[in-house]
Length: 185
View 1 (cartoon, one colour):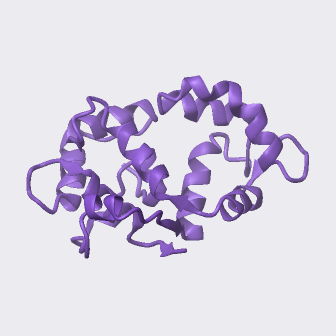
View 2: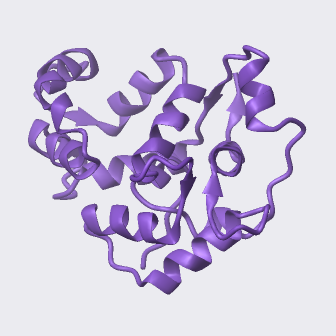
């Protein structure tokens, strides 16, 4: 299985991110109830990895078809009708594609990654809606995205993030893992 990271967790769980145990001052529920609307700026190397997941043919740009394929794989087929509007905003040079510079500019102008974006990514993995991501749910999502890994690989990934030892990733653990290498805006 390839090495993946950060927002890539929407598409994969990162082996490299799970080597350290996360620490947190407040639980996710505390952060949520305090009405903090946290926004984070992802690092450029990690965003390049996310961009590369969209760029299936590796030509350095994302086509509408590539974007739609990722939406389908993530179970977001209902959003496919929005793709032309997304490209109107993101395709700054008008060539019909989103290159990495444009991809980063959209994230900068959009104010970074919001807590809600990370919550949505969590829900994408939590297919049974029980509030926890199991190794089986990780495996299911990775397969939908065309990644090859074993259930044991997924168990190792989950264990690396699982701070409470229940064999699953809860929202607090997911949030901590996702924001570990990001700057708070």
